[in-house]
Image 1 (cartoon, rainbow, N blue to C red):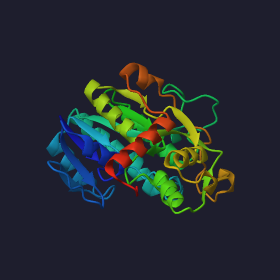
Image 2 (cartoon, rainbow, N blue to C red):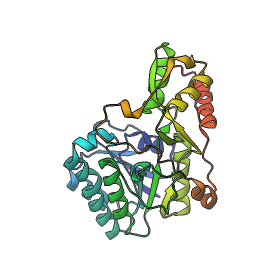
Image 3 (cartoon, rainbow, N blue to C red):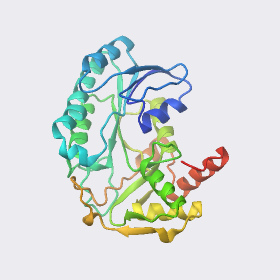
Image 4 (spheres, rainbow, N blue to C red):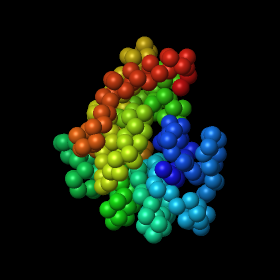
Amino acid sequence: MKILVLGGSGLIGDHFITNSKAHDITTTYNNNKINFPNVISKKINLPENWSGLEELILNQKPDIVLNSIANSNADFCEMNREDTFNLHVNITKKITDVCSKINSKIIFLSTDYVFDGKSNNKYKETDETNPINYYGKTKDAAEKIILKNENNLVIRTSMVYGSSSKVRFLRYVIENLQKNQEINTYDDIFNSATLLDDLIDGIFKVIETNARGIYHMVGSSCVSRFDFAKIVAKKFNFDENLIKPVSIKSANLKAERPINPCLDNSKVTNELEIKFSTINEGIKKVYEKRNSLGIFDI
């Protein structure tokens, strides 16, 4: 199967390529070239070089386009709305139009930030979206464009962590606690922590089954950053007292964050028989993988 990975140097794109064995893969990157055996890598800056991407799609005629391109920094998006709209919405519309002409299926990676986080229950795929920051609004708009073609698929995920050096929050926690340095972590904002390996396995499964529509691919635990860091400290034998709780309300953030946008993963679990790890299971897997590889710095 021919797969075009957009954003192959990012966390999810990189891990997908690294673990893909049975597919013919072409990928794009912005700054960091992908050097992987039997993978064609093309430098394409978006949104400036749309013509280059259009030409690549038409020439390659991929069976699947995995679109992991995004600027996930919500504060940057809030302050740079035009650039964000062009990348998340305009480019998505152009990609969708081209792919529809050549019958290429799009798998689009989205976010829990399409919800306002005010529900007392985990959000299901059928729940109405209501983003409260510009990042979430552009991802929500992009989802609606993608889903106009019923063959396409939207995957919503959240707070991805794993053994990759590209994982920011877990890296921050480990690097500082290793040095016995205090860290401040939010204790009043919650997300569905998602093991990277589980997410990639899920993407391979939806490709295999030709799934379509919307799926929430997230871990089974809804946790705060404070909870997350405490679990990491306990498993890695760090000093838990170094982890200090702070409120999101005290942070000088440009973009409002949904307080509890945790996602319900029962649809993907029941329909596709994919099991996503709890936070304790996931951190245990990261710890064991690092030990087996002799990795002491993430």
